[in-house]
Image (cartoon, rainbow, N blue to C red):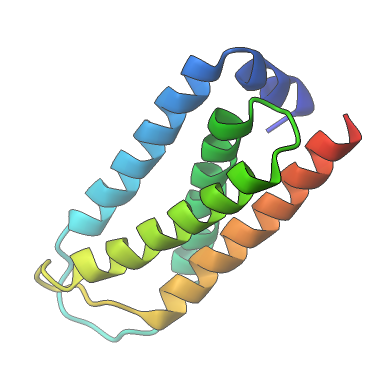
Length: 127
């Protein structure tokens, strides 16, 4: 994402909200896909997926909540909402054949969430 794209989303909050909903829906959909039973180790692709998917969800949600203005309570609320969504996504996978819940996934999701939150918070603080 470029800074110009972030500015466009901040000015057009409705677009950020739509992207937030699309991101959350895609995460849910991908978590609903049944895979054949296999080992539970995370490959590089899974790590990249979890980090990236939750980073984008976090960015879109924070833009939706803050509209580009420093607002610590909304940033904290956004972080907590996305972490809770990540945990609920892992619980959801317990009910999908061939899938399982993983604390490793939650940690990777949370790392993406926190890193993106820090980067965006720093961005809005300095612009």
